[in-house]
Length: 283
Image 1 (cartoon, one colour):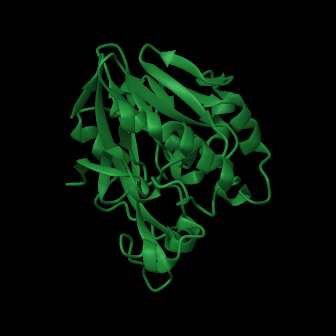
Image 2: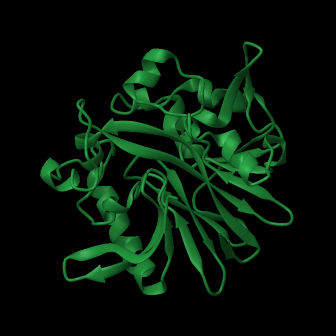
Image 3: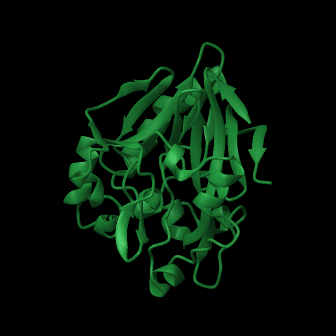
């Protein structure tokens, strides 16, 4: 789809789920956000669970692992999880990639909708989904996930990630860095402690995997932030820092949770930043 440097960027649809629309858009009134995201009878809006593959001749890197399939009926009902059309293994097979071929997993953060697919239940035993992959996470965020705040405790399910601690496949990172040539990790603090978003760039093109800094294209404007964020004002400032550069340099923003749009560039208007017409829709 898109090539940047030595990497081919391949979106991976891992499922669909739903969250409360009010929580997804914070102080933004429903009569505004519902124009793009109509809610169901329980006020839930449809959301994607989209990962991204960075594939080169030497590596196959997966960014985030989706929600997984370890949930029970009650959990699946609360979040309206739908794996019928999409699933991580099905999507990887469509790209002719097997689980064993993943060399690296970059976890933006460990909320269940981003890290749930890191482990699977097989023969009634919890196992790593990608047994040959080194899993990269900010150490500061790991420590937060192990002992989270009351506000976001429900978002961390230890069966999704604690198995990594017992493996030799966990790489705990300390702050922003260039993890691989052309793959830079930026550390954010608005949504949760030390979430990392991924910038892929060469001399001509840049893509940004936004994770929950900008979960959908509707979250591009500064005030459109989630009530799920631990520090909404910090999220706004992080967007203020990144979006002017993204607009000026024509970055492609990849949206992890937008069910209608995979990616787009951004432009500045008199009313602020919005998605550009250069978009990659879900087909």
